Image (cartoon, rainbow, N blue to C red; front, side, top):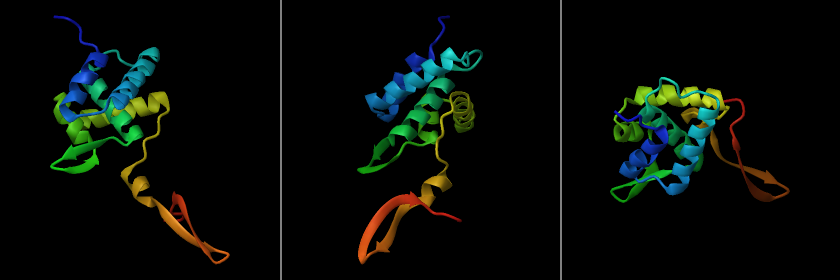
Length: 134
C-alpha cells in the first residue's frame, strides 16, 4: 500500500468544495512548515490536509457558493470532503495553530470586529476596529 502525502490530499479535498488555487497553495505551505517542525508523524494525511485547508480558508476569507449565495467554508464542509470528523479537523488545526504560531480569530472575535463610527470635528469617520470592554 503506497504512503499517501497530506499535500496530495489537499487538491482532492479542495476540488470537492471548490477552494481556490491561492488557498490550496497556502494550505500546502502550512503543511511544509509543519513537516519542517516534524509534526506529521503518526497523523492521518487527510486530517492534516483538512486542517491546513481550514486554516488557509480562514486566512484567505475563502467563500463557498451554494445555491447562488456565498458563505465562509466551514469545518463541516472540509470534514465531509476529507471524510474525517469535524472534531478531527478542529484538533489538527489547533495543533497546527500552536505549532506554527498561527492565530485564527474565534467566532466571537470575528463578531466583535466591526465598523465603529466616530464623530470628530463635525465629520463622521469610520474605523475598522474591535469593541473594547465587551
